[in-house]
Image (tube, rainbow, N blue to C red; front, side, top):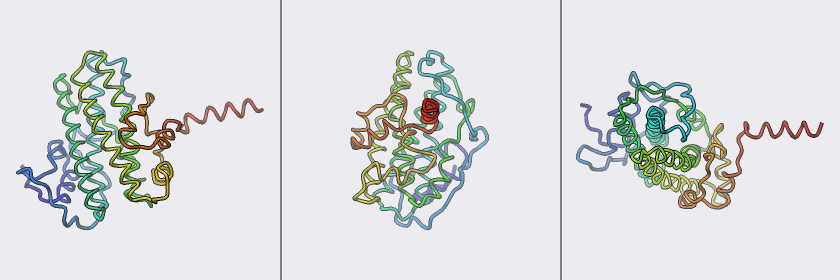
Length: 288
């Protein structure tokens, strides 16, 4: 058993420097349940990548997820649960990474990020427990490094923590407002109400996470700028509004998260370069 940690800094270092899953998912508190101290967060620390034990290594790509219509297959359901669990694990690691990288942030935001980190850990455990109940193991499935691929651009951004807020809360987590509902409905249609309930719980927490990111982007940014301007300025490439949504766009959950109508419309209308390029070719062909 590892020694108890007493500070947010030590907790985050241990989460990132320990490769085993049990340590990464250990509660963000002291052994007696009391709050970790963050009075002296110390100097900034940059962690390039988290430690991972054998069997938890990340791959450069993990292939496409099963379509929601395919979730009648137990293996397809397990594949999705494992992928979602790993997304939550990476998110927990990245919030620890952010807390170490920007120790001088307002204490209120740091406390909120510890709370989000704990949510990500809980989501991961929920998915993993469900995966185990279906008779599958986390190590049996590939684990994409997609979230961690964004870390260098966030770290190198002149916008600092605002780039992190845009990347995590307003892109990856905003997109999950859509994906969590799509797969909730897919699990439910397959008769897997237990997995559907987990997706709903994750969705409800994501609403709070997106609200937190939007609130602090406004507080840390230019008070005269719009949400669209604040986001467009700070979101690190290759992330963009086009990646902040799923194919089935849920505007109402974004309203519950406190996003303004202009920003919601901006995300809804955003097109990726892959989507836009064929249209541009068609225009040139028609004009030739």
